[in-house]
Length: 166
Image: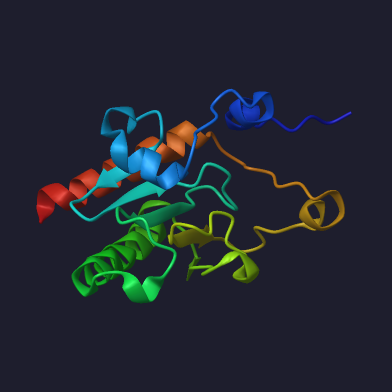
């Protein structure tokens, strides 16, 4: 029998970290837990965090600090700064992780597929040739091919280099 190793899901399976209220607001209000919460970068009006349940290695999100479920209510300057970092993030994923493409998107509202509908967030999902396979289709399972914390540290260090250079 083959075994799939996914240690980062242990906390989810054991349900030990139950956050009351909005998980993204919890991250906004607890910067001392940035390492534990896998925050890559924190700016004045938004933060970048690794997706805890990623589609592919390196999947991260850009999330406004403002709690809103409406993109149209987001202050223009916040949206522009988030968009600037989305461009930086795409370049980082292509150059730093050798992604061959990137899915970039938002699911606005529960009916649009948002897992956390009450707080908007922008996904950046790196993609590689043939990174999907039959196991997702037939077993409703994803295989994460590398260590989550190693990818987190790599992406964090790449963003830190960009910040130092600007």
